[in-house]
Structures are given as C-alpha cells and as structure tokens.
Length: 69
Image 1: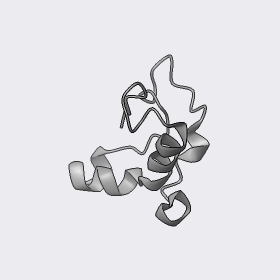
Image 2 (image 1 turned 30 degrees about the horizontal axis):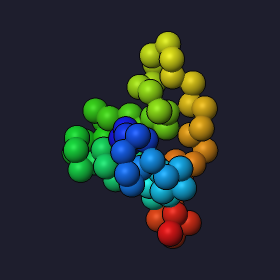
Image 3 (image 1 turned 90 degrees about the vertical axis):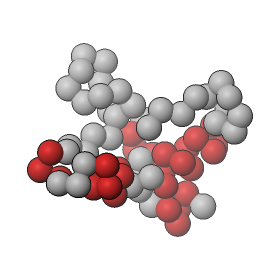
Image 4 (image 1 turned 180 degrees about the horizontal axis):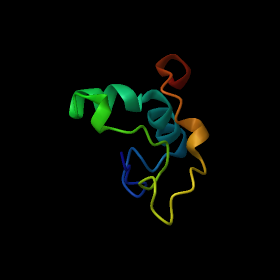
C-alpha cells in the first residue's frame, strides 16, 4: 500500500508509521485474493523478489491496531 508522502495527511511521518503499523497484510490479502494459496505476505516497501526489495524498514509493519493508535 503506497502512501504519497508528499500529500497531506501522509506527509506526516508519524501518521505514515501508524498506518503501516495498523494494516494487517494477511487480512487485506484474504479480502482481495480470497485463497491464501494464491497470495504471499510480503513485508517490504517494494514487491518481494525484485532487485530493490530489501525489507528494510518493515519492522513497523506489525498489523497491531492497538499499538498504532
């Protein structure tokens, strides 16, 4: 889920961090794909398996809504 950091409200780093921490990628993929056999959880800012994907910064992607509040 890319967030445009140049436009409000996502130009606020704390808000971006909260949104990334609140979203549970598994829930999103189950809703979008339906069958998890066809989906892969990838905590990276770029698509997993691509040359630029490192997973750096993914520690904020916890899927913990209570902590994000």
